[in-house]
Amino acid sequence: MLFLNRRGYAGFVSCRSCGHVMKCPHCDVSLSEHNNERLLCHYCGYETGKPRICPVCGSPYIGGFKAGTQQIEKVVREDFAEVRTLRMDFDTTRTKGSYEKILAAFAAHEADILIGTQMIVKGHDFPDVTLMGIVAADLSLNAEDYRCAERTFQLLCQAVGRGGRGEKPGEAVIQTYHPEHYSIQTAATQDYEAFYREEMSYRLLMDYPPAAHMLSILAAGEDEELLSQGMDYLGRFVERIGEKYHLHVIGPAYASVGKINDVYHKVIYLKHQEERVLMDIKDKAEKYIEVNSGFRKLYIQFDYS
Image 1 (cartoon, rainbow, N blue to C red):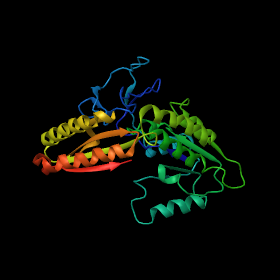
Image 2: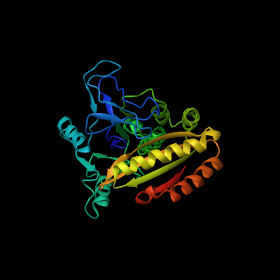
Image 3: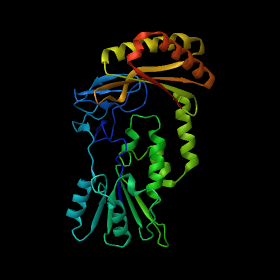
Image 4: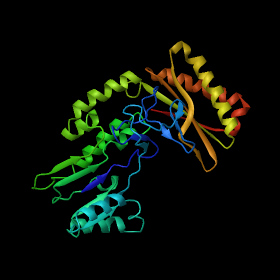
């Protein structure tokens, strides 16, 4: 089986020579590429221009990552003409029953290689599969989410576990630009405790859950100027009332998808060691929103994690 890890692939910019990924200097998440040749952090709003050369190695081969199962299938067929392939992705599973037909055909040995995305690595049991290939294993490390290492570890463990499920021994080959990363290393050895130790040290350093509690204030509105103004006021308000608690405030910034169906989205992140502090901030913020008429044209929700 050949698994393409497409999770988190959209938007980030990386160097093809050294693997360097453009990240936010303040939040340790990847910057997202936008159409105006700008790179943006969706946690704090940091913005910079898209580089023409890699800032680490000077290579000109830097740009958005593009990957697809169709390209992989084409390469496999060109290099191994005698091999029969099946592809399972969004395009091949649109029709009713197609998902089950592909899996049944592979189980019946009607193909030698099954190529696919996340849907081929979760819960399937093919006892004759002895080789698992993972392509672009580190793509999900570049998602603009503090949980990206955890999700990469989970996904790779699932993928590695697809091979050698029967009496025949299995082997996994992981292709990555970051072979030294702890989530790749620990997934390859299936070392859950080692991953936990590394990940928790990162969460403690950055005040991310479960080391701290986090409250997201999500706002949406059709008027972009009104949304920005409202979230700026709200951001200053929570900073002021949270000062005595040493509240950690990030944003306001545009959400990972800043505009959907002509509705704009922005977010503020609040972090603190004590849940009661965030609940107190939430109650005061709700009252502030209620008494200020400018928020009535905005949709605002609170998300606790």
